[in-house]
Length: 264
Image (cartoon, rainbow, N blue to C red; front, side, top):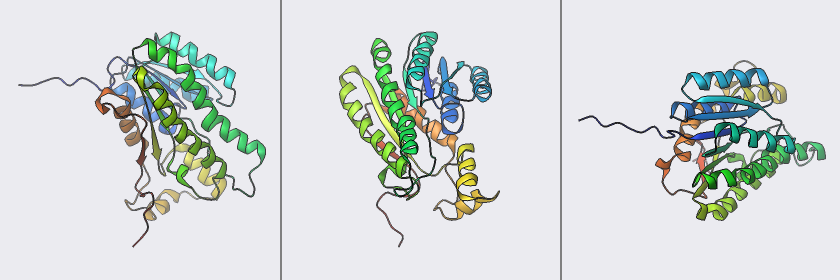
C-alpha cells in the first residue's frame, strides 16, 4: 500500500530576504520544491532577482522578486508589506541576507560598523516585527534567521560582523519567547564556511585568493569540503515546516567544526 507524503511547505507563503543569491537563493528554491504556493525573494540585483523568481515559478511556486536594499529600512518594510499583500498572507519568514565585509577591532570604521548592524541585525529585527501581524492572521507560522557560527567568537577580521550576528542570535531567542503563545516559532541556524558566489568574491577581494581557494579551504576542514547552500536550504525548509514540531528559540549549529572543541 502506497501512502502519499505531504510536501513540507505545502501551500505556504514564504518570504526570503537576501534570496537572490547564495544561501538565500538555495532556501527559496528548496521552499518551492517543498510545495510552497508562493515564494518572494528580496535583494538589490534586479537581473538575478528576476531570474530567481522565474526559476521559482518553474518549480511550481508563485515566484516573485522585490528589489530591496536592507540598509534602507523604510523601503525594506514597504517592500515586505507589498510582498505579503501580493502573496495573500505569510506563513514563513527567512532572514537570509548578510554582509561579510572585513574589519577587525583595530581597523573597523564607524561607517562599516553601522552597515553591518543595519544589514545583519536591524533589518532582521524590523522584518520580524512586520511579520508578526500577518503570521498571527495565519494562525501561526515560523521565522528562521540565518546567523553564523562566527557569532560565538569568529576570526579577528570579522569583528563588526560578529557583533551584529551575536546580537541576532540573542534576538532570535527573545522573539521566540515573545511570540510563542501566538504559535509563531522562531529559530536560528549558525552556518559555517559555505561555498557561495558571495564567499568567492569575498575571498578574492579581501584575501587575494586564487581559483583553487575552495580546494585549499577544503583541506583545512574535517570533511574535506565547504558547506553546500542546497544542503542548508533543505535543512531550513525542515526547520520552517510543521515537521520540526514544537522547536522554537533554538540556535542550531550547522557546521563541521564543533563549538568549544579542539584538535587532539
